[in-house]
Image (cartoon, rainbow, N blue to C red):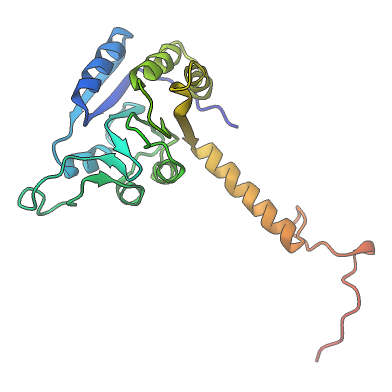
Length: 220
């Protein structure tokens, strides 16, 4: 798998869980990273943060809560969200609609936000990688501390992720979904389809012994 190398000096911190975000901000700034604080008060704010192509920060961290439906949002009344989606979750379907972060690495801390469907949604939105827990970790901050400890020292994202994930049962809940994985999966799927159809690597159909199709009745 291609190594996603992290040249990182700044992160965009999307704040849905302020307590966790304040703790993480202190850790990242202590490591010398610039933290762009992006508080979320309504769905439109999150849509703007996940479609912000002007930021130069290579990483986007979403401090949030989550469940099997998606990233939890505060439910607001229709008079507040009249001109924007009225929803209490960012689901994988909504992520596919709104995420536009080409070349960025996105990390979500919310429980169950690392499922395959959500990971694919962020990768389809242009992300190089999406990292989140597929389950209920007890301490996402510990995983992030370990991850960025290696990243700021120039380690590749894949290696830093594997090291951070290897500490205990909680950290092992985190999953890495990457564009490289998606491309590899599509290529493997295409090869399987070609094999099933009897097509070789040159695009020609494979035939029986001697390379002939066998007897065919002449057609007019």
